[in-house]
Length: 308
Image 1 (cartoon, rainbow, N blue to C red):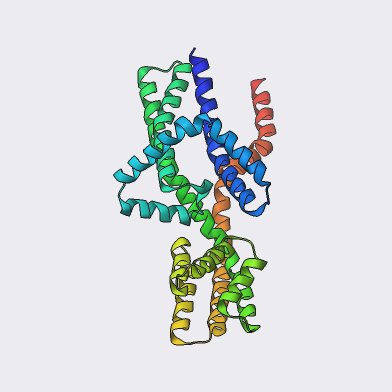
Image 2 (image 1 turned 180 degrees about the vertical axis):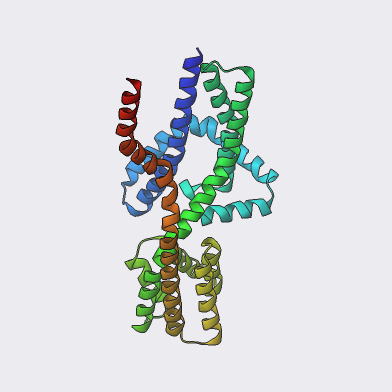
C-alpha cells in the first residue's frame, strides 16, 4: 500500500508539472488560431453550442475553485509584495509564463509535498523516527528555498546571456542610426535581425511606446528587467543624450567600445582564475590516480619481496 501511494504521489506530481507547463501553450495556440485563421461560421457555432451543452469537469468544478483561490490570494498578498515578485519574474524571463499567484502556489505546493515525499522515502528505507523527522525537515527546507533559488539562477543566467549579446546589438544599433534611421526604427531593425533577450526587450519597449508610454519610461523598463550595470549605463546614456540633444551615434559608439573593453577584461580575469580552478581537480582526482599508476607496481613488488 505504501509503495502504491508513493507511485501515485510521484505520478500526480509529474503530471501536474507537465500539465501546468503545457496548458498555457495550448491557450496561446488556441487564441492565435482564433485571430489568424479563417474558420467557417457554422463550424464555430456548432463547436460553441457543443461546448456550452457539454462543459468539461474542469470548467464546471475546478475553474470556479481556482478563481476563488486567486481572489483570496490577491486579497491577502499586499500590492508591494506582488509588485516585487512580479519584477523578479520579469527579470527571470517569466519562466513558464507564471504570474505571482502561480509562483506562490507552486512554492506552497512544494512546501507541503516535499516533506511528505521525503518522509515516505524514509519509511521505505525503514529509518528511525529521528531520521523521518530529519527527512521531513530537509524536505520542508528544500520546498521553501528551491523556488527562490531557481528564480535567482534564472535571473543570473538571463543577465549573463544578455551581457554576451550586448556588443553585437550595439553595433547593429549604431550602424542602423548611421544609415539614417530613427532610434525607434533602429530598435525595430534590431528586433527583426536578431534573436535573444535584448531583442525581445527591445520588442517589448516598442510595443509599450505604441501603447502610449514615453520612450524614457519604456527604456527605464528595460533597465529594471535586466539587472546589468552595462545596461543601466547604456539606458542612462541614451536618455541623457535624448534630453540634451547629443548625437545618439556618438553615444552608442562610445558605449560599444566600453562594453567590448569590459568583455575583454572579463575574459582576461577568467583566464587568470583558470589555474586556481584547475588546482582542486588536480589535487583531488588526477594526482591520486597518477600516484597509484606510478607507485602501485613498486609497492606491490616491495610487499612481495619482504613478504617472502
